[in-house]
Length: 306
Ligand SMILES: [Fe+2]
Ligand SMILES: [Fe+2]
Image 1 (cartoon, protein in one colour):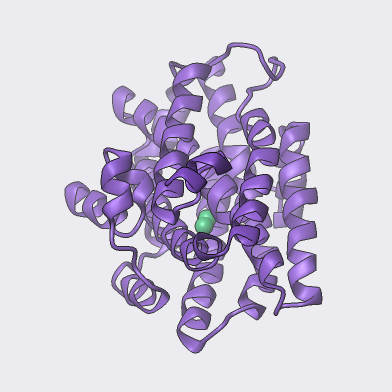
Image 2 (cartoon, helix red, strand yellow; image 1 turned 135 degrees about the vertical axis):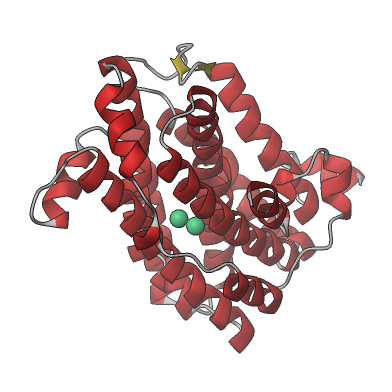
């Protein structure tokens, strides 16, 4: 089952491939194909069995508990943000197949919020009666880079699309922030290292199963973003420059989101047994493969020469 999930996760997302060369040759899936893949990849957040996870949590030492809850706070709040701030992109659909895919992505993000909310309630015992109280409590763990990216950049980009869903430049910018930076750089990087930690320790099987399914959804979302940017920024230098500028502007902010409590941006840090260089290298390598597939490298001269 794990192998099958892994193979499906790779479909359409060049970030999962072994090299830039493979990424540049990948035939990207279009929104209709990604919609059909969504129908084949259904899962239910309420079906995940957390019985062993509760026992593992009770036995975990305090430093590991602290880094685990800190790592997941960005996911729980991040999934809430990307669910509510997605509506502008749904409004900006260009045909009914893209509309179908985009509505599936919004419901996926709601499912991810449900999954992390169950973790907080049932495994961590954060059992406020109201989800808003739980979100407010978890928010206290977040750093300023997170606020900049999710409460300012993402929200403003969404508002621009809502104001004018036909603004293709605003749509390129939104997808650059959402699919390339938030999902591609942050979510899939965090997921990779937290999951490896749990697998190495042999703990939290329900969480690992659910998080794997969240990641499979995220790869499908990133596959859409890659397809969309190739069709737009990949064919128009003005749009390419807009996409490139936004990603370059937000790279240091994204790096800041990954910095754990107690460290400053620029410090070397360690989390789940991995150091900052390893984490940043993973994030940058997968971004580079996606940009290769889009045909818009971060340095404009490369695209002019190519
Ligand atoms: Fe998500
Ligand atoms: Fe997503």
